[in-house]
Structure formats: structure tokens, C-alpha cells
Length: 330
Image (tube, rainbow, N blue to C red; front, side):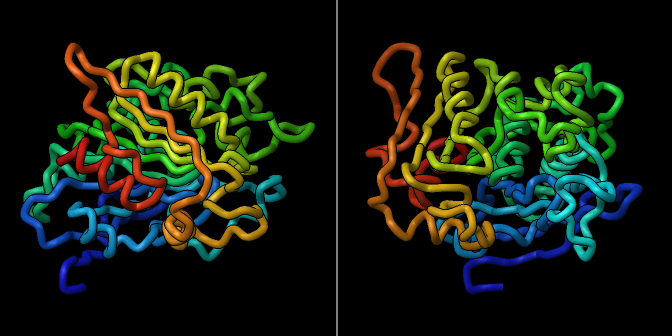
């Protein structure tokens, strides 16, 4: 615990057949602050909820409670093309998509059910995710109930955690999140790349699963305001994902801001070989606030003048996120 933030680690929110799922809570000294639910990256197969940028610092600076949540990671069979990403020492339970999404929604519902116990505002929740976690955060934003994911997954989703609570979020922040799997290659000749593994086979055989797992296909005028940040040179998740998602939000009349950072790759590095961890991603992003970037804003009002999500459009970084959260969940 710091002077400003109380830390509660290892709280169990669900018990699956493959093990317990936990979350860590970072609670600022403010009374009844809004809540940010962080979803880590790692290609849906790797990393843990510890893969989060300085949550104590940003809980204090943003005046938001932050929950970093675990979710079932993808099972990786022997000989899979992505086997090098698999870490046998990672204690996180494993499963198969849509388990990842089911768990993120379960965490949101559990957090709502226990807001009074921990002292944050259950009505004001934002989802924030990076890479694979960005995909899950975007999906959590545009799909209120897991049963709305689509017919292709109808037999694979069930609400067992706090089923009486809402899983909806009021805002989304995505760092280089995958938004449209339909633009992703199937993989190699056998179709055993990362996304075919995640979605049960190549797109040619499972087009409905690839489409319905894509957040962009679920955007409606009721989708929450969204802040997108993506490197133009991203070699892991193409920037076209965020471009398409922003365009869909704009067409649907949803407030959104999209930062496209020129010359930056995945996790805000210039060379993909330099990727370390999301834990340092915010420092990398904030290290050069003058870095070349293009900013696109979609602001919609019924009559009167637009009320921008981000006043004066600060550079991509913690201040932009703070102002977005101030505007959307406080």
C-alpha cells in the first residue's frame, strides 16, 4: 500500500474447471471513484494480470480504481505454430475462445456485485486493454451480454458469476487492439496460425466465428465512447484494425478519438525486436510527447456545439487517457 493507493492482490472472482481466476485491485483514497478494468495482452496465450503499466501510479493520478484481471488463456497443443509463446510456468488457467471473453465479462459483473465492499462506483466502469487485451476490451464494450456474441458461440457461453449484474461498460480504451479478424491471414498452409488456433480453425471453414469474434461487427449507436491508440508501423496487430473500428464508430454516431502514432510499432517501440512488456509501455508512450501522430475525433451531439472527448487533444499518453476517463466515467 502506498500513501495514496490501497492494493488488494489475488482476489478470486471465478472458479473454473482449470483453476481459480483472480484480479488485483488498486484503490485510490478518493471516495467512490470510478473503475477501470485492465485486460492484459500476450496473444491470448501468454502473460498474466501483472502485465499492466504502473497501476498504483495511475490509480492515484487518474482518481480511478483499477482492477487488473486474469482470464483463461488459450490452450496451446503440442506442435502448434505458436508453441514458442507458451510458458508452462504460467499459473493462469487455460481454455478456448470464447472463454477469454466470458471471463472478462464475469470479472466486470463480479466487480459490480462487490463495489460496496471495496468502495468504487459500480455504475462508472471503463475497460482498458492492450493488444489481445485490447481486443477483449473492445469486445466487452460493444457486446453487453456474453449471450449476444453470436450464434457461432451460442453453446459456449454461460453466465455463472454474478449473473444478475450487468457486464456493460461505459467507456473503452484500446491500445493496438485487434478489432477485425476478417483482415487477418489464416496462417500457414495448414491454417494453424495464432488466430486460427484461437477461433477453432481457418476463416474459410469458420467465417461466422471469425466475424462474430471481431468487435467491429458488433458496433451500434449504443456502443460506448472509445479511445483508440495504435502505431502506424505495428507489425503484430495492423493499424487497419483501429482504423476500421474508428470508422465503424463514426458511422454509428459514437463518440471516439483515434491516435495513430507514426513510426511506432507494437507496444510503442520502433523495432518489434525491442518489445519487452506492457509494464513499460506507458513510459515508452510518454517518453516523447512530441512524437509525430495523427489524431482523428468523432464527436456527435443532437443540436448545439460538440462537446469534445478530449479538450485541446493532448499527445497520446497518460494525460490523454485521464482526460478521456474524466469525460466518460466521472
